[in-house]
Image 1 (cartoon, rainbow, N blue to C red):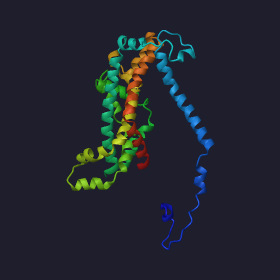
Image 2: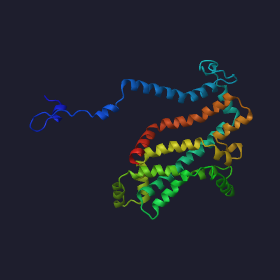
Image 3: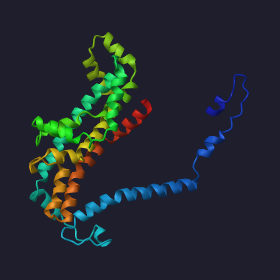
Image 4: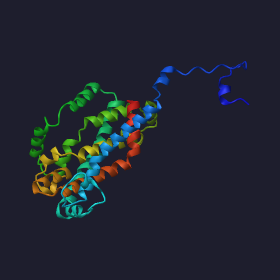
Length: 301
């Protein structure tokens, strides 16, 4: 009985054809055993260096009232206490700051994803005069530093009464050129036959957007949602300028204000751990979609 390889390499006359030699260029690209070991060593060292600041933050937050002495203070089994977390959650307004940050981040994520998906669909699949000029002009906003437009934006929001309000905090961040670019690149790779078939069946453009575009864009929406969530969760400058009262502070602004109150280091680190936890959970939930979105955008773009 011939094997599968023998059947493939046998022509119609029954004579065997020799297997073609392996391409030497591909063979040269294969890593050696030593190369694999060196690669794993470098990756392990890079992982340790990246993880060490988070480890130090958590361990030092569990040692309130202790003088930081290295390396003794980094040992996780000595003098562990949750007093710093209790002080943060009870003595400070961190729960209010956490609520403000959640409102700022979640509302911005939903609005940015919806608006960027609409704009990306229009730029990718619709035909209208000046489309390319409008798209590249909008994309040029990426090259304009946010600090350049900071003062005019604040003057505009102050004139509209948006200072120390949620809508004044959220509204200026909704026009996201990077999000529109990513959505446009992803939607361009979707087959036009789907949209033509939907139009033949009598579906309108908004129904096509809701029933076809959005379901097919789940990977890139999840990826972009994580990025937008991180941008807004870690945003510091705009919330600092637009918020005037302690009740409207976000976590980044609130934790920064603790430095002016001579709060112990362990308390500040405990607040940083509380601020980091939602980001970590959000990434764990959407990790699979993030990987699919990054891969799909790279292939389709």
